[in-house]
Image (cartoon, rainbow, N blue to C red; front, side, top):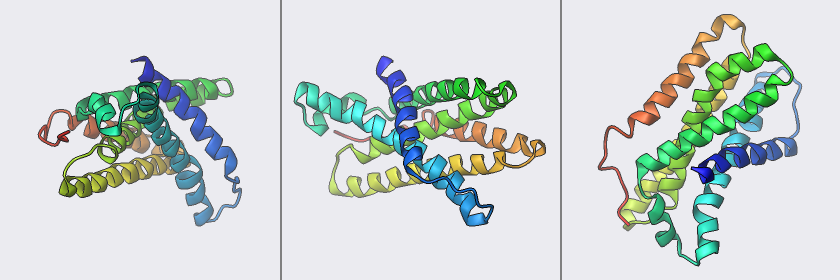
Length: 203
């Protein structure tokens, strides 16, 4: 529980550091807009999440207990647990981020609380699945399949996040759309814990 909450906190910090490294673009062209919502915002935050999950769930246990990756990752081999950990880390991420926004604009934090909490939970759960499939071992055929799944969940997290950011730039009349996207994205990833339970990795 504490390590998962730490992931939510640390991933916000790492993602923010990546954002600071990338230049801001004030142009109003389509490419500039896509750069801002997909690369500087969505990609950096999801990359920060990925690095944090990897550090805390894979690297630190290896360093602390001199274990190999297969032995270490056995502790996190349940796909359902990884999804739930991702959701919790995402909620922590959103809570801290929303508080920081609330210091500037109360109306903004209310809107973001409704929409961004399920969004970050949904994207964080997908990044947790990237770690689950990307760092778990198996047969040669399983590895190839798992890498494909890891890429799918990673790219989908960035696209969902970026599309959400893009829609929020429009007028309030479209607010229902990002809310719906965030909730559907969260429900869909949670649904994986109820279906296709055979899709686990043998250690």
